[in-house]
Length: 500
Image 1 (tube, one colour):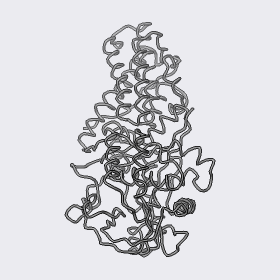
Image 2 (cartoon, helix red, strand yellow; image 1 turned 90 degrees about the vertical axis):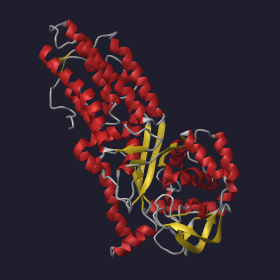
Image 3 (tube, one colour; image 1 turned 120 degrees about the horizontal axis):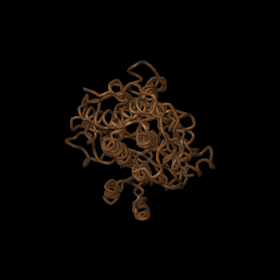
Image 4 (spheres, one colour; image 1 turned 30 degrees about the vertical axis):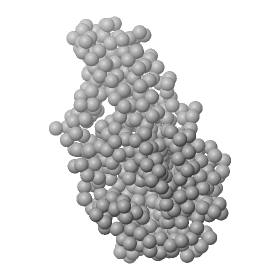
């Protein structure tokens, strides 16, 4: 039995949850569900980033305190994750007392170690990013991420001496070549470091909505240096040393490419300065584009998860974004492509397989499912499907994992086409074929349950099995011969009705 700690970014509370936020969160959820099937101990963390200038400004405009505004708006994310059946173990908010404690202890340690010093910062600042930029990074005077004009900011700040960590970061990347994946993103992080690192501002004096600096109460910590520490807070940093020692070595961050610099340059250096190991793995994915553009409020192209769930159901939604968007490069979402994927994989392949098996069992087997045959032609196919599915989930490649599982579905449909049990006389021959098909449905229900927990539970129920597929344990649950036979098989409405 292993251990796995998976984190999503903490999403800015002023945003409304859109399919880009949900993309990362569903991937993290599915990966954790797979490891739970393996019997691993898992911690899955998500949450919200609640400090910073935007929240303070919006709260003031709405006549409430920043805390009241955060308490109100955080519910949008909680509701979205409930809708998508996200099984997170923790939900962290940066306004929580436990996080304030961890931030102050973490950065006090860095300060005591001599890597935080007082200075004055002047430069371009993007309110939407809550980040400073160098002039060379701007695009026509605008933020390279949001495309909006930046502000010129000047104030007394404390600085983290990031420049002192350039050589240590390069050595760490050399010693840990798999720390950032895919390799193209690792190379991008190395490019930032090799260009030369400058010291970075970590506090503000122009606002009070943030974590107070313990050695200077005129300052609060700048949002990124508060936010990044959430990953350590959630597993006990500064409060529970034993728990932190257990979970921090197995941390896996899932992030979008726009925050690569913060997580793959700043954060490892901060960890070094605080005397803890940098994160074990950082998996970086591209943007989920709509019409070729990144989703943002300014472009008015955000799509809420609930709008798609209304049309495709929760499981259809989860399946599409896990299967259709390869984890790593940018992906371009379109509604038409979602319909095509739903009809091809869910309605025509899995849904049709369940329907034809239930129909034949009713007509030829008296509605009672037969046992599979030992040595079935599908036995080796199932074994290979499990091996490939497991390997893909373990390397955080959900699209490849589901393709491997669906290979078993396609092979089973082909097996039925070749044997045509609906044309044969009832008897041992039909029983053998239908027992094999029911066994592959049982295995598929387990292998696909991280992606589609509710639909797979319904599939499991319809073929007469007690409990739920997500309560099974691999690899045993994928071994051939687990369907006992003698169980009632239910015909019902289509598991995935076709979309027009």
